[in-house]
Structures are given as C-alpha cells and as structure tokens.
Image (cartoon, rainbow, N blue to C red; front, side, top):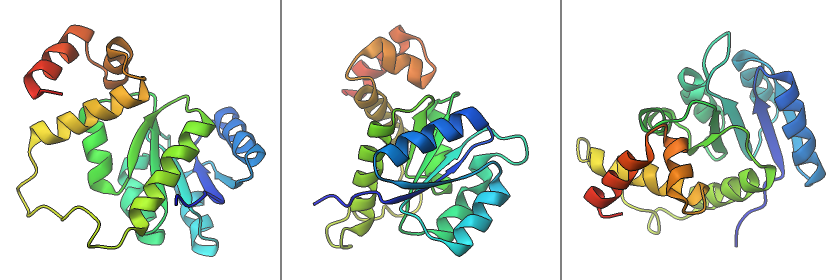
Length: 184
C-alpha cells in the first residue's frame, strides 16, 4: 500500500511557480510550505519534518544540487525531488548521487509529482531485505545509469521517443541509437 504524501516543502526562487504548485498541492490535501532560498528551506525543515521536498536546481543564492546532501541529512525518509528546466543525463546522475530520489522537468504536474513521490516514499519504507542490494563501490556502470535515465524519460513522456529526447536534452535520432545499443 502506497503511503500518501501529507506534507511538502517547495524550495524555488520563482515566486509564481512556487505559489502555483503550493496551491495545486493544497487542493489535493497536502500541507505545503514554501521557501524562496536554500537556507530558508533548511531552517524550515529543522522545525517541521515533511514527506516530500521539492527543490529547484538553479537558484540565485546557491543551487539545489549542492544542497541535496543537507536536505537528505535533515529528512532521511522524505522523498526528495529535484526540479529543473535544464534536465540531462549527467544532471540526473549527479542529483541521485547527492541525495535526490528523482529529477523532474519543469513545469511539473501536481498529480504526477504526488504519484512519483508516494512511490519513492514506499521504496524508502521497504525493509532492507526487499530493497535492491547496494552495489559495491565502483560497480556502477555508465550504461546502467544511462539506461535508467532513458527509461525514466520514456515513462515521463508516455513512451514518445521525440518527447523523451527533449527531456534528456538530446536529439531524437541519438536517443533511437542509444535505445538500440542499450537494448531498451
């Protein structure tokens, strides 16, 4: 059974986007708070935990990527979603390495965000025996990471290769070649 997202913190410097997403989440029954800077968000989490942290990649006073480890430390069980308008495979890999659970492109649909976050929370909650074993250091393969990023983009685009290519920031033909090469 998937756990419902009840609380969220939205960290984004774009006032219009932040308040629009906050309103959309509130209409869906989520208690959503906001922060305009990385530091505001960190302070907010010290006083009140949340189920979901949504953080923007590019912000004027500190980027979200460099703050992910701090957010993960404060909220180890929260689903952490990084948002970006500039998504690509290296950014997705870096975001996961720093503590994000997933990377989504802006603008994000509130229903999709909540579905994704609820699934992520369920994975956090799974007992260690049910979770995939942690690979030994140095065993992560670039092909595997690339395959996962491509699969995520295809899921997000509903299987449309041209749209997935745009999400990944690559040409459609390049994505088709990669799909053939990786056997995805």
